[in-house]
Length: 164
Image 1 (tube, rainbow, N blue to C red):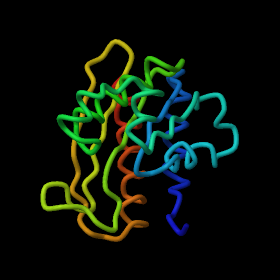
Image 2 (image 1 turned 180 degrees about the vertical axis):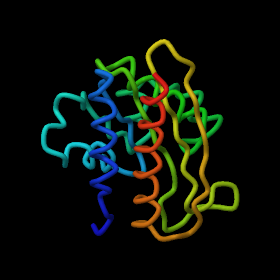
Image 3 (image 1 turned 45 degrees about the vertical axis):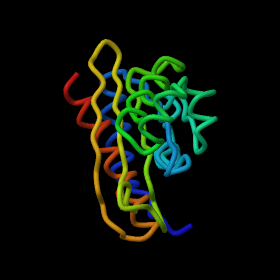
């Protein structure tokens, strides 16, 4: 694994959450725990990081986060609908105040309808409306797609915490 961990961004994300007394959770598919791993790489992160859910399979998404089998069947794992349910499930099943989710196709592979480099993000906050977005990073290669996904997720957390 050669995906770079954005240490400075992780450190800044933790500092922003710490300043507001916010706990963080993640729900990860295509990154396989690398977002929570980037946060816990920073010493002292335990006062801000609550937990991470690695839900690579559809069964794990359903069993651990409560993602609806109907949503998975209708929209597929790589969809904003699933990203929303993942983020909301992580928030509901943790002590966190903010939860970010990622589900995508890091590559190689993909299809015409869901190309390599497509990642869907969800961001759930206590007593706020969940937001979702899709980024098409392109066929950058598995390591680069995962790296930009981590950076994007940390930026989303930091932006959300700044708005609280």
